[in-house]
Image 1 (spheres, rainbow, N blue to C red):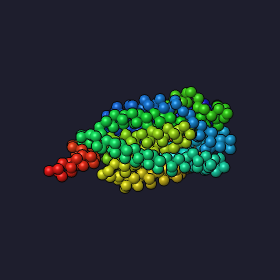
Image 2 (image 1 turned 90 degrees about the horizontal axis):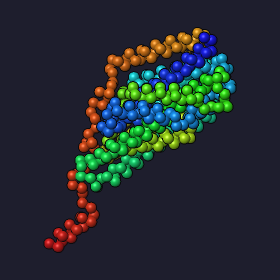
Image 3 (image 1 turned 180 degrees about the vertical axis):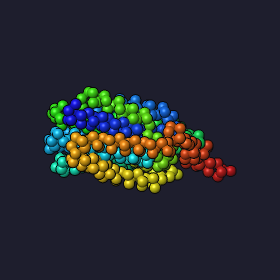
Image 4 (image 1 turned 90 degrees about the vertical axis):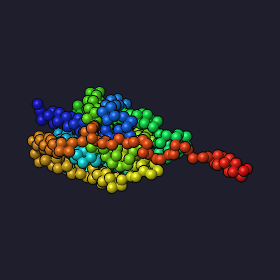
Length: 404
């Protein structure tokens, strides 16, 4: 096998493994809140998410085009070097994904990928090979705007949900119906995740194929086999369930109740679907986290755990530079040693992945212990079994007393 072909095969394999980590890293975005409220059983939730991620991956290719034909100027990079640069960038992304998964930190797989690619390109080529205009408009700005937008939407929907159900239901919580709504909205998030995140790996593979002439640059659409491979891989990763991150989003940020979960998932889905249609490669993790925070702020008596929020935001800030540093270091080895550098990088990547996985076994988090206490709907906002009298009822009561 020629060296160039070997590198492309390694790039595709590593890209698909990144897709797999993206799946289990981001399962929480769709299924943390329905699991927390008891709307879905853990295993049922991740199976549903996996199927819908698979379907969603076939619905759009706009984000893939952003990556394969926008962020990196492939015409500025030699075809003999670029596949190795992509390989180095993927190592940076996977390393960060595995580390944050171990820490139970819902960081951005998308930004890990972008950071790894940017760092590897800066070291292996030059800054001229990066279109910073595209990075700013379709990566950085959405990363700032999308979580805030999702937070505001979730806050508003939560307020409305509690307002319209407050007077008319005499149950302890009165909002169990929202659990059924959660099944729909969480399914929509899983579908939206497939339309956005699976596209990123498609874009990476397409970019590698274009670079070595295996696909025309005039056609940046992913080939069918690329779409199928990425869809199946992210679905498998999703089914594995990122239970550590599910625990953080489901109960680490705030105690999620059915109406909150419905609001958070509806906000997340609408934001992701709108961004996918526009080709914005945003972080579904940041959107989901913003939605959960907004729903926590929107429910009276709810407590948002700001210390956990702070940890997550620090992770967001570190994602691009940290993955960029690892990607840059991997690219430096390639620059020094050529094809042998790629093989050394591959060995180092396997060692890192295996070491982080072994470390995770010491305190394993599974479907059985991710949510040790499923939220009790009756513990939500306290509502008396007899609704408070309306203004008209109080007026009648006052007239009766005066008539005496």
